[in-house]
Length: 317
Image (cartoon, rainbow, N blue to C red; front, side, top):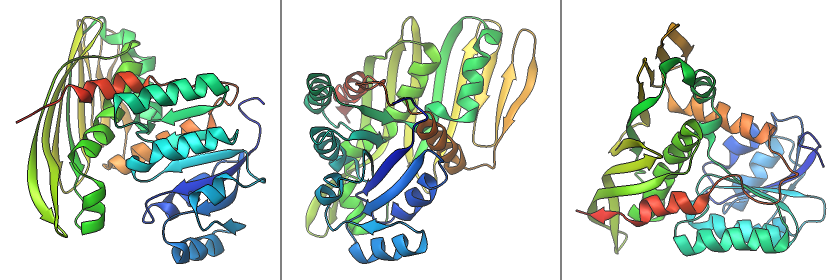
């Protein structure tokens, strides 16, 4: 099967608030035929399926994964569920595409890799930022700034307000969700795997529906990419933002949701303009990743273990 062959897709989305978003996104991809969906809210699934011409709704995730009329399972939603769904899909010889973090521990990351290799199954873990237009432009023009000297990232993430989503987004889960995306992107730009140096975070203890919950407030990571050190800072906010600066010996790139600026040895100016939101960057990246998914591969093209290890060394302050 080449990477443009039609895929018969089942969507497993463990966050009912995101299922319609992914249904509409998947139906934009010509090589994908969406056959069935599952989310925890069956009534919502039925309404969304009816409104978007999806043929079927499954009552459980395993029921969807087991269907004979699909050969590919797209997995997204709450990261705490992703590894289980990835392994169930592969066990039934379905192609598994996970959008966002799949592993929240080193042991899980190792198990995912071993399972895929042992059973000769397909698993791709997609971090959309890497595939987005501005990041592709950085990679295409990286020679303009000469040898990379330093990288800095300032980003914010949203904290959910309702109790259910807060309980799903405890500190450790959010650490992986927000950091894997950035570290994976920088790894693609630098062309090498990340080496963790130090990670510290500040968390807040709260009481949510009688559960004691630790919520991430701030994180600082220092990650080495060969001889380059990246400083990455995340903080909680009301919106998602990103400011990425890559300094080279001959110039720099600076990216935020509004524009990508290049100051290089030959060229300078704005390479890309956005609408000011991270959402549009991530959406275009997700579409490109799914459109170009290479189904001939039998293992991930992402080193999930190296991403997990960048968080595993975290020191809580």
